[in-house]
Image (cartoon, rainbow, N blue to C red; front, side, top):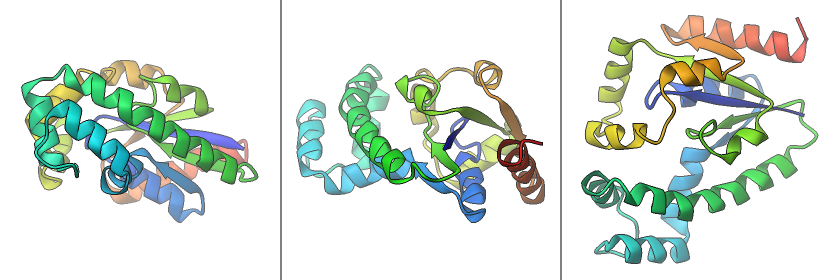
Length: 191
């Protein structure tokens, strides 16, 4: 089994590229989705975060949590220490369930910056030009203040590119699909 990690800047289209791989029949571990499910369903973690972050509700409200992190960026490390072990459990379960697959895809935003990097055999960087990146972020209504805090915990674009095996240019849908097929051919067919 080959584990392919997808990285890029916040809002660059990593999840969209993951969906292209999924369309080709490969199973995807989406860390953002796992985190959202933890916030939605894990009462113990919700209560722990609510207590530490002094949130009004025992159920996580993402806007309230974002506001706390924007006001006090050092709390992001505390949040990661609570969330990352839970994500790791889900990742190990995903890998175990898919051990007979030829290829799995890991869509993990902090893949390179954390110990999650050891789970990826190959890393693909999704490269999105500045104007297009801004457009994607606006379309997804991503809080720019929150992005500024989060990006301080991410490697910069050039370092991520240097640590990647492949770079996908996110310019348009057909080009994304074509590049994904090329990468699959190189990995699966050893072209």
